[in-house]
Image (tube, rainbow, N blue to C red; front, side):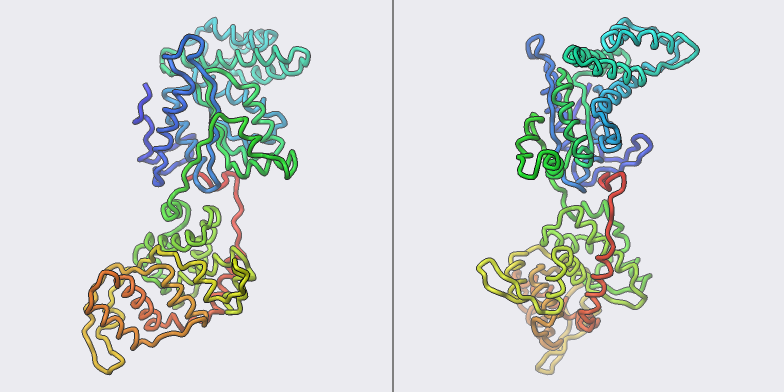
Length: 528
């Protein structure tokens, strides 16, 4: 009996020899919710006879990188003990010219296994239901089945039978309508055969998952949807079609023209659409990038200094995520930019130092607009604002990022920078700041570090910074917590000579790293 606890992703899992890590992005709650929703849609014993089973098609919308393949594979695997389940990777089968054959062969092959019709003949008695099923699909093929089963072979193989049956039905054009009806009856029989198996006690509805449809050839993707809509509207079966809906709309427009209303067209294939919430970018990056190279331990061995300093790679990764969020980078691009940051660190010679925030920001600008990035680095930006006014780098940064209140974090011991303060008035003061995590808003970083490094704003001296730190210590006002954070970041910038890194060095890093582009493999890099 299915319960909410039947879906549990707190531990890693192996599905068809493929490893899936535990769920760190909080997605299991969506699978639990959707399961109960679809079970209610597909089968409800409280409805009157003949209406207890219904067909339902759900579009699971999820942009690339949000883990829809991980979601579908773990979800479908957890449903198998309680429901008939079929999983179809449409992209891996779009070499076929016939989506109908793809679906029907997958359905029959997978349901056959779940029904247990692969046991040795000595342990198996042919139920009348199977004979009826084969008669409905293709009476002429009963002889073939009988030969396979009662002949020299020990196992039943229905894959060829299924293919021949469908071909036989569809080729008879004048009987197409009846053939489709027979096909529906056949699939229904297979589902009921699984649910009637007393050993497993599976229940309605059957779940058919179709993944990666948006990656298929446009013609194949559209034909697959037509197949699901018009051939497989079978009671007691629910479809979950996972897509990046925006990409699927492009596929539809490739068939019907750019001006075609693809969203309206796609809407007629689905009863409803569920959009997987985009994961927290920091948690998402933890899963997808090799962030151990951002750890203090790794950087110490590599003899590379970074700013802001952090021993914990996850804090540094969070800082990168704050910047990516400020630029509204989609998941795919966020991974690529972060990988470029890490690749840059991995290839720096020993003794190097780099402001990781500066590098990440410039990589984001480069990703958005190459020319604008160069103009920002050279401090020659002439940007036309919304009101038509031409503005430079300083005004552009202020206009775009002044509302960025997310914080950058850095853990360090202030006494490693200044044991004592030396003020502009010539006296010294003890450093009373404690080791811990200091924070600064992203916009304050832009103002006090980024623009200064580009030459758009004047720098302040170490003595002035120390003056302000002494005053900040004495006042202890809560609203100055972030002020002390930026002051310490400035102090370290000067003390560790990050301010002496030429901006042309950053430009070289950006140009080199941006030449590296990631191309999706067969998995689409969307498995986690």
